Length: 279
Image (cartoon, rainbow, N blue to C red; front, side, top):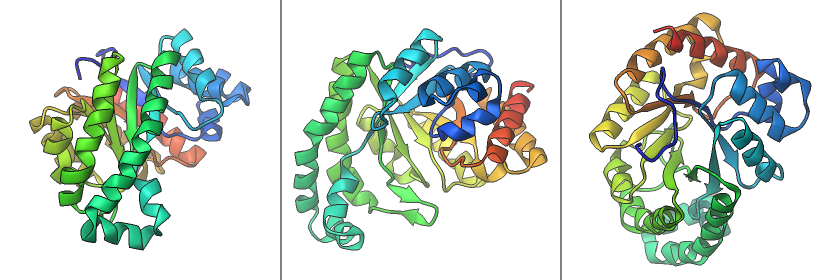
């Protein structure tokens, strides 16, 4: 976590995968513009965010990095991982089956896509990103999407090449995945990631277990404000208070889990954040 350029007072907070139209619920300048880059930057300032995710695939990504940097918010450049495009070439079920029956085939396909990911990392560095996020869903609400053995033996060593390349450009890396990825945390740490973003598909009990497991693996966690708790103000305040207490332990960069889709949930995030900061 040391390489992440974040304020620690009272704790780092950031925005991850919040749709631009939903950010208008923050009000003020964020509601007054239709420009996604400016809306992200203005919402970040209004919420006191230290960092914000910028998906490299968005047409407004370059403008968002500049707008965030102007406002002293660290842009985290999000690039899609190389696994899922390879899996989908065979069809989802057949591709996932091949990770078990012919892992070398899928691994070769991943190798063929690494240069594209490396190019995207280089673009983020050139634009002034402060960290790289490799986004690859390895699990979901129902459990792992790929076998841990495949992820550990075939996928994470290839991720390590991406992390090394980012490090050579002065950037550390975060891994985003939905679901419970506890079995992979030691391998994620060995690949030299500094943090994981705990995406959707977790209830609080599993998030809590993930957080403490990540601490044991010397990984920071981004997340905690679980979308499933944000649709009702009282529940939102309760999760915020709980996360505020956990954040005092260190190693937690408080953020949404990437599942927010409605203005109501966004207002819940605001309430949760207020409660967290009051702890």
